[in-house]
Image (cartoon, rainbow, N blue to C red; front, side, top):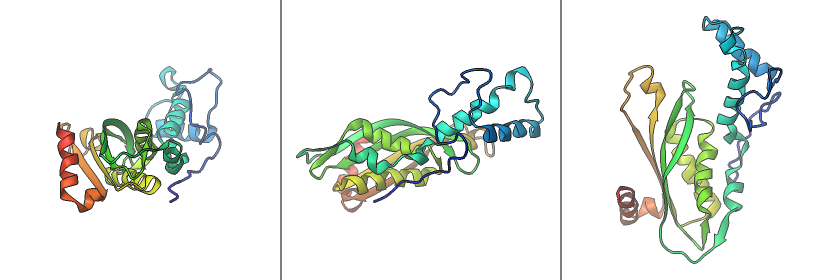
Length: 212
């Protein structure tokens, strides 16, 4: 199963910034992207040459490159690099994985926690890689519903477990800062695959562990 989705890499894009701050006053990270940000600042009614904004285009270019770096990562490879043969027959659950993503409709952040469970089928996955798979898909322009399903499908395809369950809880700044401006709303999505989808008892056990 190939779930890689390469993003275009014009200029410096695709280099995934190690440092989100300028290295020097003369640094240029991505001249085309930085020019777009400067134009946006002008359209917003500000002066990109004033002291506080001079390096903002470079910082924005680096930040956006990092926040969308999941396009350049193959989730299959992340999983298969940390699979271990183990005769484990019980549910594995990783709770409260922090994630941060960008809503594709407004390019505003949404963030929250992911809970991922799976039923091994002769192999277990290094626990840090579960969180890594969440990040692979969170660091793209997203909607929460698709993000939840992508994590479940990636693990199901790469591990071939008996089942995968993913629940995500998130707050969306596109609802908090604009529009209906509901600061306390939370969106919950779930994706059940394999035994979690077919067997109500397995699904109930997973949901009970989330509340314990």
